[in-house]
Length: 238
Image (cartoon, rainbow, N blue to C red; front, side, top):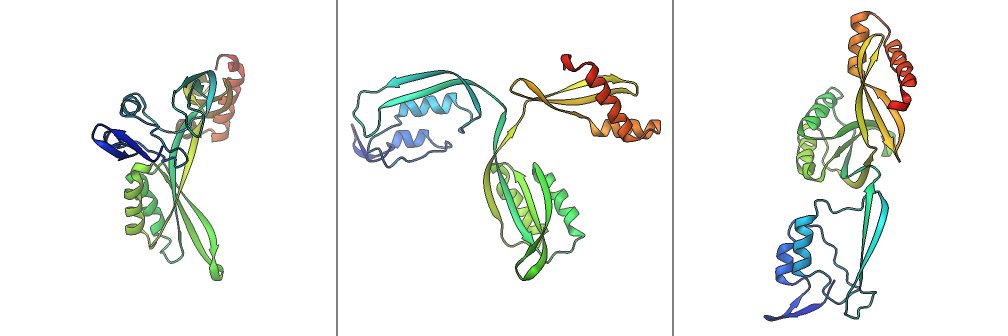
């Protein structure tokens, strides 16, 4: 909300001092359209104790509930809540990008290693052309908000970059599990991904397949084919 609220100690701006203290560490949004207190100290305590993440998930709604207030506001004085199930694991990450056109190519490998050691979830390089048709490399780093400053420190220390772009994005992961299949070449772990209760992707564990191929002197693609043949036999049980 916004505006002012009357307390036993006088007139205070919204949020009231007690509410502001309780909201520390919680992302907030100040709605200037409603001149009233929308979050009380009691509501702030409930949020802080019961809520772990403050984001909008991909949700399959099962039930909807409403609670009505008594004050007349510029908007309907109704709180709506949803009960549902997550359709996939959703995370809010940031993408840090910088363009580099004056760095020794041999340093890019070391830079990637340091970024992963620092906590990057993914690092990838893209060849690009900048102004004046100058070839360059776009360095892209996916990480959590908590790792932002550490990642930036590595970028500025280990590359020739002097600036970076930060994009806030939401990453959605399909639910997955790992099963072990008994193939003609031995046991191989397989990652199975689901969405909307259906199998959408099946991926053999690369390192295991590679090790078996080397030990048995068999082409890697044959190991993969053996896994897929086995999957087709047990598909209903996956």
